[in-house]
Image (cartoon, rainbow, N blue to C red; front, side):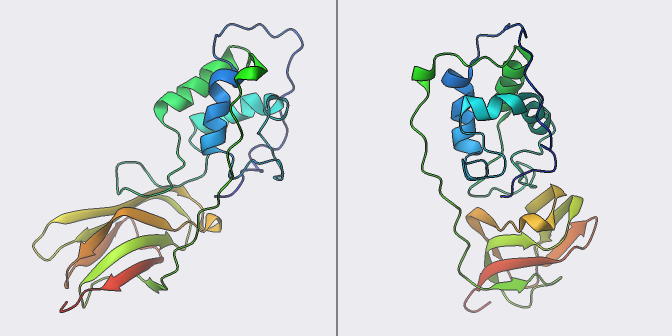
Amino acid sequence: MRVLVAALVVPTVALAHEPITTKITWSREVVRVIYTRCAGCHSDQSSVPLMTYEQARPWAKAIKDEVLNRRMPPWGAVKGYGEFKHDPSLTQEQISLIAQWVEGGAPEGDPKLVPPRPAVAKTKPISNPRIPLPAKLDHSMTLAAIAPLADAADVRVFAVLPDGRVEPLIRLYGYKAAWKHSFEFVRPVVLPKGTRIEYDPGPIPIAITATPQRGG
């Protein structure tokens, strides 16, 4: 996951007398969202750290805009079309929480309520070798992960099985190849021989991590 520095170029300076109209605070609610969803890209060592109230407050309105437009955290896969591990996307409840906090003046609250900082863990890349995804499978395989190799504004990738059933694989939305995401399925997808891989629209170049099935 990459930091959206381009979108957060200049922070919005807090007004000295901005009214506080919300009970939602950084210390009690918002910091927990930042720690669980944003710490990987916005640690103290990043170009835009957001780990403390002092760091995050100047960016409050920019953060609100980014999360409302689902540009932050950058992910690029639509929920519900394929299920993937390590999904950092915010829930609608978390998005609303941040928006209400900012609109209410972005108060700090009681610093004593801030939880311990999380250990920032980077997602480990899948070790199995990647191969290009063919249009039609000449053998059965178990699909573990899928990695787009190009930008995609809005593309659905799905498998049409030999019996006509459709298996959704991934829907990319606003995806940037520079992110270099490898989307690892929660449950590996078994694709029999003769399965067709289709795109709407497309195609786009995609690599996969997969294991051939015996006898397929």
